[in-house]
Structure formats: C-alpha cells, structure tokens
Image 1 (cartoon, rainbow, N blue to C red):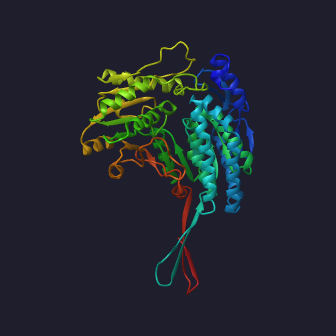
Image 2 (spheres, helix red, strand yellow):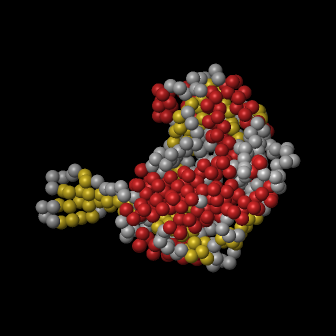
Image 3 (spheres, rainbow, N blue to C red):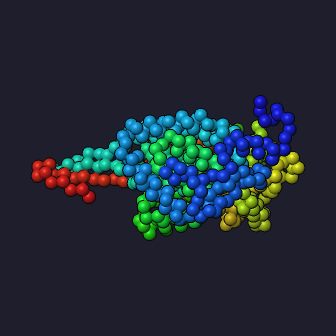
Length: 508
C-alpha cells in the first residue's frame, strides 16, 4: 500500500513511525574496533528531522581522545586488512554490496528522515552505493604496477601500496553514496578507515556503517561523530597519512592547510556552480526535464547542481515557458509521501542562507519568474521549505550569481555567441561540473574541451556512473573519485631499480 492510499496521518505521526522502522537505536555510539561506545567527552547532540523539526536520535559528540582511540584501532585493523589477499578483500566488498541491497528500503527511509530528500530519490541512491562496492571489489584484484624500460642493464618496477589509515570526512546531502565513494576504493586498496559523518546525517550514515562493520573484521572501519573539532582532530592526527574530504570550500581550504603542515596526501571534493548550456538544436523537452532534475534534485542541495542556465536566444522563450511552468507545478511536501518532488531544506541555517541569496538578488534588480520564498500552504508539514525559484537579470557580481546557493534556485541568462557563453560559463571560481545540451556531437566535444570543469555531462544531468572519474578544477577541489583512476588517490607509488648484472638493488 502506498502512503497516498493510507488513511491520513499527520507528518509527525508518519515520520515517528518511519523512524522506528529506519533506525536501529535512538542513541548512537561511536564505532571503535568493532564496538559501539559512548564518547569519552560524555557529550551528545540531537539529530532532527528537517520535515518536522522533531528529534529522532542522540548522537555522540566525539573529542580528540575518541579520535585517537579510533585511529589506534584503525592502525591495528590495517595490519590485518592489508595482509589478506586481494581476492579476499574483493569477497568482503561483494558481501557488503549484497548486505546493502538487502537493506535498501530501510536505508532509504533513514536518509529521507535525516536530510529531507524525497523517498524515491533516496531509494535511487542506495543501489548506487551497493554498485560502488561491487565495482571496487573487481578492481581490488587489479591494482598493479609497471615494468618500465630504462638504462641498458637497469630493471625498473613500480608497486602500489596502501597508505594505512584513511581519514574520510563526508557531508550530509548524499550521505551514503559519498561515504561509499571513499570507503569502497580505500578498502579495495588495502587501507583501513576512520569515518567522520556530517552531523546532520549521522544516524543514517551510521546505519550504513553498521552494515559494513558487520561484514568486515574489527577495526577496519571505525566511525566518530561530532562537529568541526572532531573533523579537525582527525585531519591533524599524526597517524593518519591520507585525508579524503567532501564538503564546503572554506572547510576544504582549512583541511588542506592542516594536511600540509604534516605533508599529508589530501583529496578534496568541494563546491560547484555548474553551468548548463542549451544550444538551439537541443531536444527542448528533454533538456527541460534534465535541467529540472539538475537543479531540483535534493532541493538543489548538491554540489553538481545545474545552477547557472544559459539559453540560446533562439529557444530561450520557449524553454523558459516550459521550465517556469513545470517549476511552479512541482509537488512540495512531506518527502515520505509518494509524488513529492521537493522536500525541505536540511536545517534552519541553510534555509535562511537560501532565502537571503534570493532577497539580495531581488534588491539588486533580479526578476523572479517563479517562486522566491516560502510556500504558503497550510497543508505542508513543519519544516524548512523553499519554493522552486527561477531568477533572471541577476547582476554578475551578485552573490546569487557567483556563489554556491545550495538550494532550489536557478539563475538564467540568454546568449547568442559561442565564445561569449563559454567565457561566461568559465567566469567562476568553481570548476566541478558543466552540462551541454545539443544534438551535434561536434559541438558537444568542442564545448567539453573549452569548458573549465572536471566533469562534463552531455544531454543529461546527475548521471555519474561508478566507472566515471568525478571531481573538479579550480576551487572545486583536487583529485578524483570513482573510476579506476581513484585507486591512485588511495595508494602510494614505490619504485624499484635493480642492476641485475651486479645484484645491487636500490629503492627510492
């Protein structure tokens, strides 16, 4: 029976019942060496449902001592994990993938209760999480070095070896997939992990970690929860040689500074302000649907959102008529209810930030084609909702035009000249994603070469398969996630040069 066919219940009742099904406890511990424990600080914080504003769990606020214990356990776990064969590691990862699939509905419900994303979107995330572990299970058996031609009598080999303990810090917006993006390749390469989830999505992330820990040997994956001080303790810990971070640009810069002090290997996946360029020969119906997905998925709270829309003048009016009409008709409401397309913003602070961006743009002369505020609908549940918003005439120096809003707000511009639109699209400190809509493959290839972004999509949005390397340029980060290339982020290269005639071996 679907939610829409059940007797009417209040959102609070509906979400309270769902929380009982989704979460295994109402007070989460931190995971150290296979045991769930309270933090040594004795402090906890509340995890709240952004749809209803109600608390659904207590989470530990871990301190530096807790991080130290987790790192110690991870180092012990690494000794055992790196010692087993790649075939055995692959089997563990495959078992994790199977266990995640078995819990798909429960995990999806947990994500929705934590971050407010419509349940159908959360149900789409969980299979991708399982696929990450499946994919890297295969690659675990294919981490190889090279034999390199060198001097006449030199014999040069390269080896790839795990770092040891990886500190993985993940955000709240796509919590399970971004956790898998780090854990799956790190484990495949032979590393152990200390994970720090986002405070807004700690319960749902810990439910995923619980499944993973039930499969793996103790200490291979450990988890500490808390706020910025917890993450800083992990980044600064001397026994964590590798940091993998996804989050805001300002925090990412601090992570890089802290990592540099100890010469750590740091990969960063940071913010974006993705341009979406629609050419006059594009399939407009498809482009409208794609870009709606690109900006309204998870209420726009995603780094790869198609946040800047550039429409060719020949199709701008027709496109906007369709896009604005469909945006205005989007179903806003309880994310557990079938048919909801737009759920709440994750918390009050983010809600206020989005509304301030819109207000500031209006003050600077922007035109609001639809939305622009809080829905006036007495049937909506309590929570932090923002209307789907389409803005034009936004000055280029306005914060809404150049900063990451992280909400359901589309900024629209019209163009006529190719070189001009490419220049405008590239005029950003970000370079994470860009999208191109055209029926001419030559235009697609040309634009891909000209756009300053690490990840380009053609005639689609938000389809980033596991096999595809994902990451950004400029202030959108360093390194890549997914694809075969990511294994170089979780392994160190060692070289051997041997003079076989004399039997002398040097490693450098």
